[in-house]
Structure formats: C-alpha cells, structure tokens
Length: 514
Image 1 (cartoon, rainbow, N blue to C red):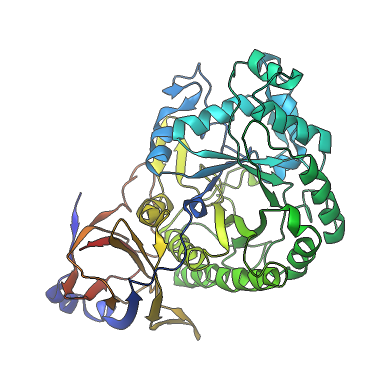
Image 2 (cartoon, rainbow, N blue to C red):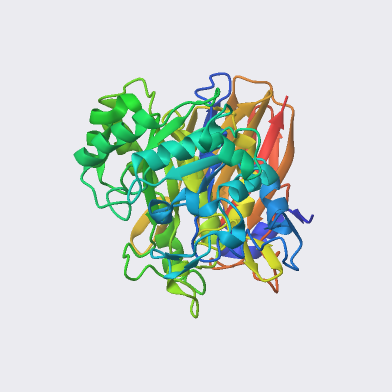
C-alpha cells in the first residue's frame, strides 16, 4: 500500500489548486448519542441486467471459479466488505416474482419474462435456496421483498412458512425435500416495493389497508421474529409516508424511502457516468446532498404518529442513477463508477448516520454491475469500484455510537451555486474515536481542525485516503486500481486537537486510540 502524504512544501509547489481552505469541527466524545446500526450499510441485488446472472451467479458448471454457482472473486470481495444485509429479489422485479418458480430442480424451473428490466428471459436459476446460500457465503442477513403487486396474501404467508417454520408441515417438508433441513432465520421482510408505482400503482390509503392485511398473515415461526417493512414513497412525496404510518403504523417496524441522485434532475436525460466535466461533478454532489432534507421531512411526518421513533425509516434504495453506458441494453442499468460517485456515497452515509435515531436500515442500489455498484464484472474479470472502497472505510462506524459534532465548513462554489466543502461522521466504539471526513471540492484542498472533547487521546491508527486526479476518474479492467486506498499521514495530533489536510475530492478514515 502506498503512503499518501501532502506536505506543506508540496502544497506551495502545487499553487492555487492546493490552497488550504479552513474548516473546524467540535466533537463531544463523552456524550455519545444513538447507535449507528450496521444495517444502514446494506446492499441490494435485484434480478436486473447482469446484477445477479453473470455478476454474482455463473452456475456450478462455469469455468469461472465458483462455490455452488456463485463466483468466488465476488463472494470474497463482498465478504470482506462486512455487508450486514442483502435485499432480494427486487425492486420492481419483486412484484412479479413468484417464489415457487425458484424452488426444486433448476432444470425443471419455469422460464418467465422479466418485463421490468429488458424483457429478457428469467430462468429462475437463482431462487430461495440459492439466494440463502449466497447470504451464507458472504455472511450477511437476508432481506426478502414479498410480492404484493401481482401476488397474494397466501403466497407471501406460504413463503414465510416455507423458509422459517422448523416443525412438521407440508411447506416445511417441501423445503426439506429441496435440500434444506433446518429452517432459516429471515428477519427482514418488505411488504411490497414501490406500491405507488411499479408495485401496483396504488393509492396510499389502499396500500395501507393492504399492508395491514399482509402484515397480519406474516407470522413468526419457530422463534423467527419478522421485521416488517412497509413500502414508502420516493423523494418529496411526504403525504404517502404520513398516510401509511397513520393508518398502519402499529403493524410495521419500518417504512421505506427511495431516493436516486440524478445529476441533471431529469429522468429523461440523467447525465453520463464517465467523461464528464466539473459541472456534472458538482451537480451530482449537490443532488446527493438533498437526502438530508428528504430524511428530515419524512421523519418529521412520522414524528406526528411515532414521536418515540419506534418505526424506522428504511432508505432501502439510494445511489446515483445515470444514463446507461453506450452500447449496453438500456434495461440493464449499467453505468461506470467514479470518484464523484464515491463521494456521493460518503456524504450520503454521513447523512444517514446523522439520522440514525430514525434511519436504522438502508440499501444502496445495487451490489454488482447495476447502478452505483460495489463491483463490476466482465466475464472472468472483476474490479472494485471507488464506492466499494468508501463502504470499506465506513465499516468503522458499524454499530458504533454516534458522537455529537458541530462542523463549521467552508463552501464549494461553482457557477453561482454552493454546497458545503466538507462532510464528516464521528463515532465511538471499543474506546476509540472513529472519524471519516470528505472534501467535496473539485480543486481546493481543505484543512480541518477538530477539537475532540471529553476523552484523552493517544495516537492515530489505520488512517487511509481515497482520492483521484480528475473529477471523472474511474477504475477500469485495464487499470482496476486507478482509484484505490492509500495510507494517509498528512495530519497532526496535539493534545485534543486533530488537524487534517485533505486534497481535493477525497475521503479519509482514521481511528484515534487513547
């Protein structure tokens, strides 16, 4: 691993592009707030494009090294990322998925048409047993999305029993016949997905009644306690959240929120994922920061009926969505992943961490080859994206206690608009302070002075940085480590004052032990 050191002399030599703008923060380390749930760092794997088939699943007969059909390189990388939960089978696909299509001998399973994503064949090679095997391989919890749009209450209830009942019943015995003797533990269940749109085009009050019905028949079997997640709306549609929580809140554990970052703000022309200028860089970061307003205002609506915050806000689809790569099937949602996207990830995670009293589960879209992916594959080749490395950095915050932070940040101005130049999260776990800090500015370095109060500080450890030379820098199969973590040493710790010097478009992580 290379060391990244931006010395004062180098700052002078770099000239205007490396002028150190000043920022300050105060961290109160002896007054921890709520726990940052590890489940905020969940992933999403839909039957969409090559996200599942080719990206995760290659089949047991493939010449790509695999375990029970899942490619070893991807499994290893995802396991190293400490993924807390994996959402499946969708997304829009979930509301046309019938679980019985995906059990039994694979060569006897029906072939369906994936009407949402490219009108391609869905051969159901990955079903319940295969997906649960994947969760075992990467050591994560399953998050199942039940079919409400085209399914029935009975179908969902039977799926829950098939997976989680450990006694004697026709469905439990069918699971055993299909190779799984012991019942699985499956906590997270989504009752529908985007029921206002691709999941059924429902009205809020109708869906609230339907949720109450489905939730009634989603039973707890054999000690498995379900965590029931209602289908929320996207973006600024606060009325849906309020209606569903008011009418069905007593039967839910969470309600979802979806928000996709569109650099242009235009679904018909979302902007490119590579070869873009600072305009698209700034616009993407600016749009990503809107997550804070959305989470705040949805949570405020929920506060009217749930002031104690028993019901979580599940941000179970988020990330940047760009135009598909040229020459690819537009229904496969294939895009590149740049340093800009990595910083959209870091700032979004900072927002979700800051709201972790209400946000206790989230899922970036998606895990492999689709939208803002952790991993890209092409045949036998695989690479980790810049976003992967951000998620790796942020594992330090998994189940840590959020620390109060007052951040006095400068601004990043571009074409008459401005956003904060710095974003951060501070947490505490096992006696150490964990800090992630992002410099969003495209051209200016930032100096951040942190006054860390209420704890005796010792030394900085495990300090790393992720940065790039250009705003649209990416990793490619020819250069998979173009953007990769390096050691970070351009800091000083004197007493309880930590000074960080961050180059433009960068994110750092470190721990401070006592």
